[in-house]
Length: 412
Ligand code: CBA
Image (cartoon, rainbow, N blue to C red; front, top):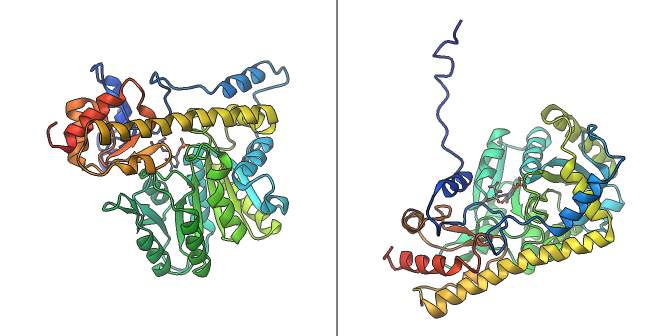
């Protein structure tokens, strides 16, 4: 018998994903000079995805390894991967690791780490009132869905100040102070998405002070380690500082951007606890959650990263590859700034283009100007004016700058 036509009547039609729909629109656009500044994915100067040379090398080693099989990994992932991943973010000399206080689980890239972290908190955090997470305004749009999915309601804290195109530090700290004690605050470890605006070391110190004072919980999302400064250690400094200060926290880690392993979905969740005994209990519950959701994580990307992180030579080579990517992005920032300020004399101050860091730049243009860039110049970017700097290259940067200039002047 045919299924009743009413079966799915109650299901509302969801809109397409606001970031990935840009990739689809760009791909189907026949315009030769089209530019994709939507999704945060690295491209080389020829606008091609870049397979890191170190990843090619590690893949070759795997292919030639006769001992490899296709068995399941353990539920919490490949141990050589999770232990190296923990050292990468927390530091090889981290006392928390030495004391066995870190529960690390391999996840489906950064998104999976966010989900597992959110799910774990939803189940086991000591909620004093309603389950809420404080998200920076603005933040990566997917954070909202990830937390709502597990019954945790997002509320926003001030972060970006459109007047200064910089950090609203007073607003941020004010929110930390006024939130109920033991609130959960999501913090971008480095290279804040979408603004490219990070707190300074001094500001992180104040943030840690207030978090400790109010007994809040720090939920770090670290999707861009290496992309902010080109240096893996420097980009981990906020997380390491918080661990050193004894802030209760977890870290979501992604290898999509810094290793160019977008499709392999390789990431980790690290929960830093007060004692080894607490960490063991946490890990046992993470393992139960993981088992019911994915049973065990995929092996290929984790094996590649385990090889790279555990071999000193490959590790050094990876660092050089990261510098290549971060360096090209920084160069694009300089060129765009020069074109706007010196050549085109675009109205307004554009210093934020060189002051912001990481994959994205928050241009400060209006949704109407963003729309005009997409509809009239075939330049794809999110309506909030965020551009992925990696989508710019020596061939399209002038086209972009000229059209941005026109949009700002209302002439597009
Ligand atoms: N956290 C943040 C802050 C991110 O920006 C992203 C990726 C992730 C998840 C987590 P993954 O699951 O691939 O490891 O990354 N954000 C995007 O680059 C894009 O990949 C972006 O364009 O915003 C996305 O998924 O939206």
